[in-house]
View 1 (cartoon, rainbow, N blue to C red):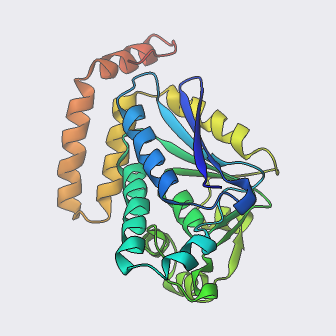
View 2: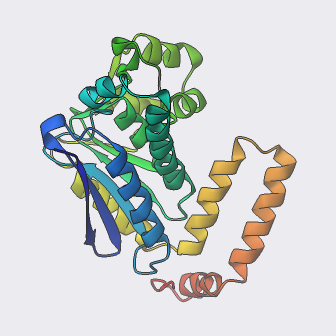
Length: 259
């Protein structure tokens, strides 16, 4: 049975649940398309201020469905290329989405599932969660931006170990390395992710969008370019109505209420 992406809400947070538990929430084209569609709708919905991505049945995501991939070997190469384009469109939409996206990881996050978690702004993981770039174990190479994200966050030797050897790495170690924001008890990843989302939902949405854009652009920018970008965002946010509300609330010692 093809997997699905379930969409529910928790206050101002959209919760997207990978639902293909028979195959540990393995991904496929229908999920990629649903993910892009859900984020497009959420971007234009002012009632949604953050997104949590999680998995059903005790696992986050096992990556690609090997049965489907084996079948695609009998088809023209363009079929698999189009499927990967779908995955990459979803990854790119998460990265450029102007609201915070949090991965809530239980169990396995393998292959493209690991890449999916890395694409999010925050990762909350159960302390028994296992992350693995399993591609080389089945004679494949990474997709989903995993090589890009890991190479920017970790030393080259460790990235080579994770990608070439397919070594498993636990949430506590990834937390120590700075790739996991919260390492929590098994079963608590989603609830902790929703608490983090509530904290973010209380911040000015325009400011979070600015910060995400600045972070995304920082790697490619020179210092001069980044300083210019920071100036532009700061001035726009100062003159945004939320800027006035934030400063006033601080001076008046009361909680702010942002649009």
